[in-house]
Image: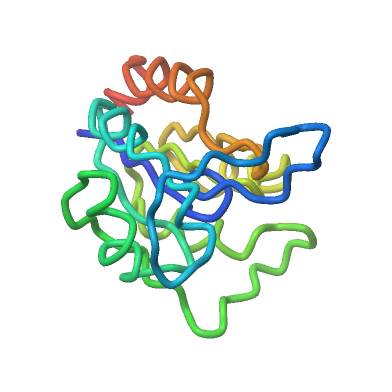
Length: 167
């Protein structure tokens, strides 16, 4: 059973919020245009790295199907499945729990999964551990930095682990 990788867009793929001290020269401009001014920050080099991970990629973003229209082609990714969020998001009843967390656990339906987002907390990790029967890696990415080589190394190692491959 192949593990899932739930992928957020804003933060992990479209970094934002860096201070001048964090990025004195500002963000690189990759020349993309689109519905969001942050599109210029979309590094096309992320696509091959994502495709090389041993998993099934799934959009887990408020961009929803727009991720397939605007993000996937610029990264060289195929059309990916999209988590369909409830409108409005279901309240999980746990203070501090990210509104995406219950939906991702439901979508995974018992499969191992990794989730990449800039808003993951320990509350989400605990909730997933209590409510999801398979292994899960909730990987926090710094929004100002986006996905880095270290993040990809962490994801690749976990996705190739016995836990992720054998659930």
